[in-house]
Amino acid sequence: MSSPAKGRVLSGMRPTGRLHLGHYHGVLKNWVKLQERYDCFFFVADWHALTTHYEDPRIIPQSVWEIVVDWLAVGIDPESAVLFIQSRVPAHAELHLLLSMLTPLGWLTRVPSFKDQQEKLRDRDLTTYGFLGYPLLQSADILIYRANLVPVGEDQVAHVELTREIARRFNHLYGRAPDFEAQAEADKKKMGKKLARRFDALRRAYREQGDRQALQEAQTLVEHQGNLNAEARERLLGYLEGSGQTLLPEPQPLLTRAAKMPGLDGQKMSKSYGNTIALREEPARIEQALRTMPTDPARVRRRDPGNPDRCPVYQLHQVYSSEETRTWVREGCTSAGIGCLDCKQPVIESVLAELNPIQERIRELEAQPEQIKAWIAAGCEAARKTAEETLKMVRQALSLEYGEF
Ligand code: TRP
Ligand code: SF4
Image (cartoon, rainbow, N blue to C red):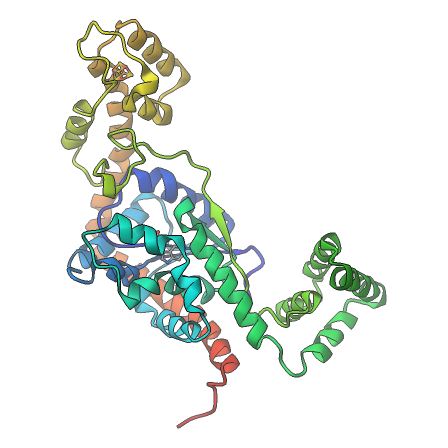
């Protein structure tokens, strides 16, 4: 039971509404790329949706369905990524419970989103046990698949950091099997005399002098031992740092470099600002929304010159338009040579051209619901299988594997 050689990616989305262009540019295009390079797990976090929507959860079923269809429509491939629904893999809940036993309360109350969200979403009651546990449930989501990389936005980095701390604490508490040292020594010998001696020297340099470079070299050395199986390699990596076996690997956040997708008002596109264009929005309404979106407030009349740097439309040109078009905008705007509707036209065309094939694919997919259900059922099945393996190890570590009753 180990992470695959090419690295495992895991990420999730909460089903609390429709996906919009912000999701597409900021997240989904990245997922489509990642699925080619990594072993990817993508899931709909319906339990996480309940932490904020427990009073009226009726938005969940429709959102789950639309999200799944939208993922497929933008090119997430169920043959190469595992697509599933959180609540269909109950192992997440058991791991969440078990991890809660060793999670200090202060680690959760200090997560910035705990207070931030309570302040931001004042109309919701977020003083619940479930909301406090939100980032720990997320940790369970990640750790149960032994994921190495978690593509997330800036706002979620603290949750990945908490996950790393939980993994470290877990490994520290339970990673010391009684025969761990003896086994690691035996693994080491399998590398051959020369490399084993090198390993010892590097391990000593790190443990006695804190030499980080030695640690890195030793890690690389172990990772390249083709004749050791994954379990032995993990044991040796744990032995290097002296922390015992790496039962749960520490994940890294994978920050998307995509520029922030501007919304209809120039702020980041986000449902909470009410400035979104949904992937499923009707073309006529998209056109309408773009035609009426605000421009440089200084440009009141057609003959007033404007400043693109103060205009949300120009931000959309930066996402959608060529250098040439942007120059046309700059010149036309600052000289009052073009009107704002002229200026918006290329953006309208680009957005419609981008969404047209996606919406067509959505229609095709929705005509074959059985196929979609089969893909997701297979994804849930594959997820359960992987999750169960980790859970078995965790139960073992917590002395809960004591035979049949
Ligand atoms: N909290 C994430 C968000 O709001 C969703 C999420 C739940 C998630 N579990 C996860 C993301 C695990 C990455 C990994 O966007
Ligand atoms: Fe904005 Fe374009 Fe109008 Fe200038 S011409 S204010 S950039 S919409």
